[in-house]
Amino acid sequence: MPKGYWIARVDVRDTEGYKDYVAAAKPAFERFGAKFLARGGQHEKAEGPGRARNVIIEFESLAAAHDCYHSPEYQRAAAIRHKVADGEIVLVEGA
Image 1 (tube, rainbow, N blue to C red):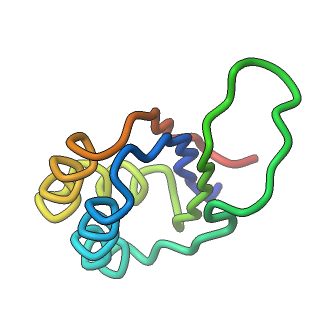
Image 2 (spheres, rainbow, N blue to C red; image 1 turned 135 degrees about the horizontal axis):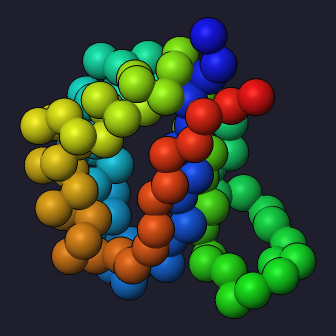
């Protein structure tokens, strides 16, 4: 079965508030077996406007990626993120 991924691109507006999001999201990521492949490291904007923070998270399947995102645990964390950051998250099935 192909893996599932979150691809997130984020501009953080409130660094301290973003720490609250990270802490709140941790239970959802642990529950669904998230594996962080990239988490805000150096990057190059090859095309388009880009974002300051880029994250790639691997899950066992697209269904697990979906279930994590839509879980009550993650949605509580997302409410925090929406207050302190702007960005996009895409759920993608691996090859």
